[in-house]
Image (cartoon, rainbow, N blue to C red; front, side, top):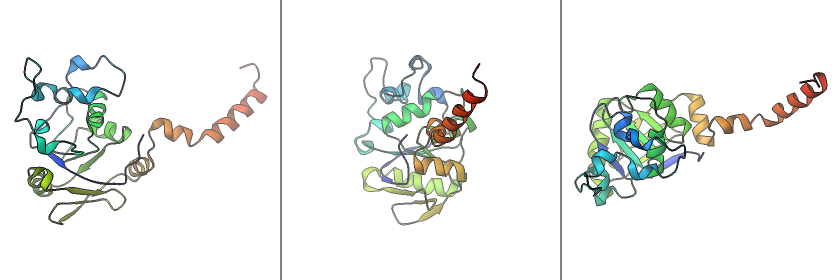
Length: 201
């Protein structure tokens, strides 16, 4: 998993509330267990018409949103079914940070496990950043995870809270496998001892 420390980039505004995981990645794309390739179908039913053509006025299809790495969303993003494909699709598209007033719990935790920083801020702060995001490439938002701040294009700084352990994992690029590999010497020592003490196992 790629580490996350600082990010400065274009943000896409999605002021919708209750963006559920089926909106993020519709159920027909859940057959794969690969994390790559899902970005093409991120927000599929809003991005494409029935013939598969891009809907020009959808935010992620606009020229100013090209290369965006930040999503500023309405409250309760990630609700609905607990599909890990949702953060997979966001990450494959290029989104590294999602900012909202609130997140569904499972989606929130899945973001951390996949290298995406979910930032929870008060409604006033999100509204300020939403206006920034509406400026497209003319405004860049800065995120400093070690300092736990989000800086708007006009220099306004918003502080956010984050669980210290989740912060440690993101800064060091540690998913569940990476955390286990940090203990590989202790695991090897235990296995060697177990083979000596219980050779019949």
